[in-house]
Amino acid sequence: DVKVTQSSRYLVKRTGEKVFLECVQDMDHENMFWYRQDPGLGLRLIYFSYDVKMKEKGDIPEGYSVSREKKERFSLILESASTNQTSMYLCASSPIDPGQIKYVRNTGELFFGEGSRLTVL
Amino acid sequence: DAKTTQPTSMDCAEGRAANLPCNHSTISGNEYVYWYRQIHSQGPQYIIHGLKNNETNEMASLIITEDRKSSTLILPHATLRDTAVYYCIVSSGTASKLTFGTGTRLQVTL
Image 1 (tube, rainbow over the protein chains, first blue to last red):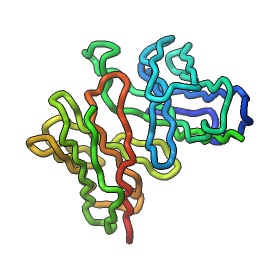
Image 2 (image 1 turned 90 degrees about the vertical axis):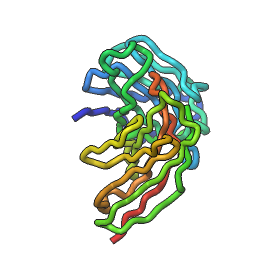
Image 3 (image 1 turned 30 degrees about the horizontal axis):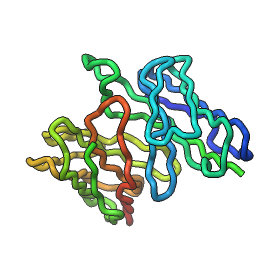
Image 4 (image 1 turned 180 degrees about the horizontal axis):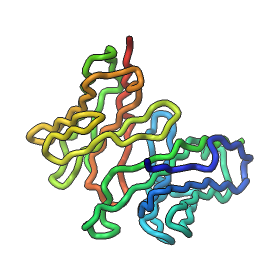
């Protein structure tokens, strides 16, 4: 089974701290994603990556950065945490359709981790 | 990507079929219909997707109308473990984006 592992289920940080959320997948997927989930707002895409060292902004990238130095690992970084970044953070990965133009589409099947609940005080 | 409309919540008796509707009247020709679900305190889980034809797998069936403006996810014999939020998503599948709305909260009861 595909496994997407997020480093911490629960974190509590203080305003202004630098926060790293780590995600590792074990199925050699090209695409990786970071979402945040808030009540009433559904899941919102922060950043995604379709290859090592490649990244693209999602819908709400402000206040976040990402790093993908290895194919299996995608990190979300909060340079200076703020209280409005208190949320559930979800990492996902997906393969690319064989035969499709790379970077154009994926299968649409995302495999999610269990989430990291971050509280910023 | 086209927007979807789903009921906020539904109930279903255990053992009965759960039929979850989704409207996507602005869907375009190259857009797929995806269904995911999210059980409490877990990440979303892929269920099924389709373009034009009806699809079935071990989890569910997806029925897409001929004009593709709506679809129904069918869980043939719902169990308590199917209690979750179900998301209907329409997307062309470009590298970024499946946009998750707020979904339908399905409650399966005894």
